[in-house]
Length: 277
Image (cartoon, rainbow, N blue to C red; front, side, top):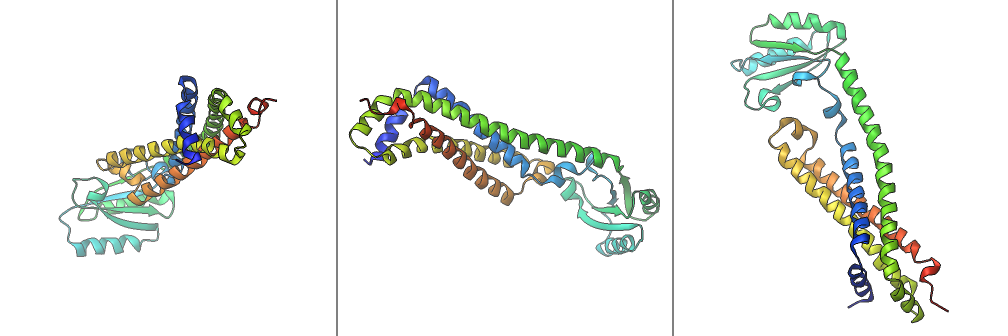
């Protein structure tokens, strides 16, 4: 057995209730940090856009009859797009918006907020149009403001969580290494290199960060499982996006765990661990 694994096993065996509590709290704050980081990576449009009833804020939504032929839908699309008061128009099948519905939707972005009422009046009189809905522009500002405030809160949380995790990890290492102090002195007296003592300490910090990263991956998997039954949740995170967040979160968790381990290494430089004269 290599020296690293021997010392690492001895360190784990020296963990007691008090040091385990500090390491658990440190891992919890690392997990909270990673969750905040994952939320920051969610698409802003899916969280900040939209209003009540599922209508994108500031847009006109036209529900088309399922009986319309494809050629008629194309003709309506061209007719709407050619209007000077329409900035953009897009078509989506009803199943993409509300699973179980039939037909289709036109999502129309007016050239100006004042143009929306005129567009609604014209479209309501067209054949094959089941309904026309619109939403006010004020809701967009409110939703955007809430989203920005939330993101600033998450950024502040990132700083708080990482600082708390490092401080708690240092406290945990302090308690653990004090119970391991005699072994450290003996190793130094026997001529064991400092570089043989440091890696197991850093490895313990990496283990804490790794466990937090794995818990984040489990949370993302559960979120993806719940998103399969909800169109709104599914729009927040695709499979590729979830995989990227999971990989980034795991890497970041290991990195922070390494920093915690380095904090533990700094404790070994104190007089308490120097060989007795």
